[in-house]
Length: 241
Ligand SMILES: [Mg+2]
Image 1: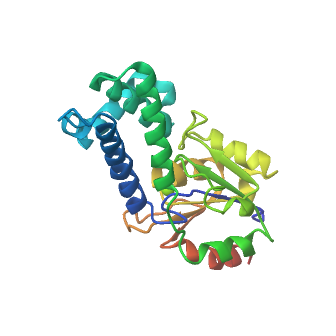
Image 2 (image 1 turned 135 degrees about the horizontal axis):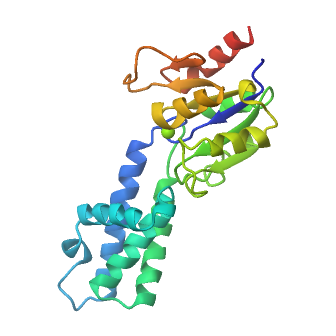
Image 3 (image 1 turned 90 degrees about the horizontal axis):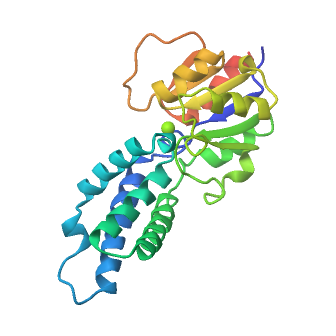
């Protein structure tokens, strides 16, 4: 069957996400600590001395355990952890909620301060003339904030739907909305566990972006190994035969 639908993972597929997340992780936390200190200049304590970044990371694991239905919604988990920590630091419940919301807004600003790989925009612009295109992400990247939304007719934030990849439901929802059978779909993603395996099991073809050269050498049927998303048009031309 000819490929008519493409589903894209976002983080580490269309841009290098690690430096983005590192900047966002430390940036919003430092911002919160500084802002809390500025709001009570008479105290010598700082939020980050009481709760270093490692404590925040541990707190998020704990929140994820206590709220298992929210396990894929990383933004919610962050905000909940910050709220509980700021309240434990001594602020009222209401003020803790407001500070957590401010910090998350700051996190999301930093998280969207990224540049896709240079080939991406032109590639999507060409591809959308021949294929229906969806995005499926477990993360919290908002394509509208990245000026990429016009290239995608479907966007699925799988984590916020409580069915993060590798749960197949996000793939099935995307295919249904693209009006495609699994055999007409090609998924493009970097994670062997969250992208390759679930899509391949549904009967989709997969372009696996193995940028880190870490995967098994023996590929499954229908899985095509690329080292960069810029190689996708060549693969599609080959598959179209
Ligand atoms: Mg990814």
